[in-house]
Image 1 (tube, each protein chain N blue to C red):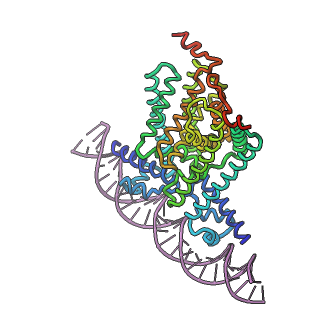
Image 2: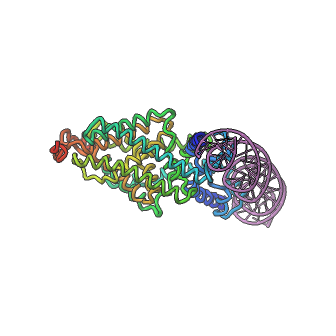
Image 3: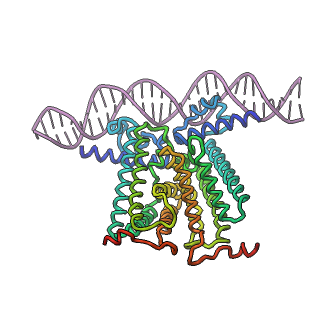
Length: 217
Length: 217
DNA sequence: CCAAAAACTGTACTTGCGGTATGGAAATGC
DNA sequence: GCATTTCCATACCGCAAGTACAGTTTTTGG
């Protein structure tokens, strides 16, 4: 029960690296078990088939993703009570985290699944959609909090602005991987940060920050 | 010579669809030839091995990509002599094009290759890097032309800003595919457009457009 | 301490893929 | 019209992936 959990985790770790580097279809069980130090039957004890491996791989990745976002924006919220400042601080920490990953970001499992959708059953692709929507919703909450305090320079669709961060991250990961330059991901996140900052920096014509939140304090 | 070119094209078309839907590793030659209506020897006449197929697939995709960019921004340049307006027009046309694709964008081959890099030889991954850099360079040229006329609201790294479009497109494709909503890609491009527009719209404090280009006319 | 369940291993089998060898038909140049 | 190039068919091989199943060791609750 205890040891089983450990080997299961090892399998998932090895499989994740392989999937992100070669794709799910080209990830052979043979290779995974060799690297994990077990036999083929050991693998099939933990996972009914390859599809279940995919599902668990994705579940695991999403959970870790949410954990990281929680931690970063949680800490950012501690550092500033202003929602805009907190969000900007969070983005900066996120950029640093992504840029400092040894060897660069290994890849986004959501993107990997997306580019091999025909390999998976509906459960997996549904999970993938839910995952990306929940991340978007989470970012949207931050933007809503900002909007409650700051007026945007231009009319702003919060959904689009929230999705944009996901797009920047997924696109930035690709950019960083292809050019073998982890810093490109980090600076793309900072570019998004600059966009947010510019949107909510008080314009000369309609300078009106802190309408109700400041009034409440 | 004539017919060979046609079947070769058919093979590439079928293979491209399969690669973008299932990944390269899971794309079997057997399946490709079945759908293309030829036999295995027919395939191996046109391509030495699977790796050569990958290379041609990527080459083809990149060429088409550049053709589309040329056409769009070429037409945009005809519609306005102002580099900023032309770029904004081009982005709008690009967004429309992407949103109107029947069934949505099938996927970016560059991203697909990126997420299966260990499957390909150096020629393919080098080609991939060159492709993304050349697109970035092309966008950068537009931004440089804009910078020759307009002053940015905030200090601006042209490389980052150029890369951002690539990231938005690749990320937007993923977003659109996962959520099965082609419009999301289009509106992300429009969001990037809004960012560019905001960056170069004359701020109240330092309103100084058209330094030399306007003076020349 | 000891049953029982959990956590594996060994082996054998089926299937299908990537790739090859060889031969033949069809188009093309001259 | 004929040789040459282009193009594709049949048949086959080696190999590994995925699966099934029976057996064995390890862990653990009571």
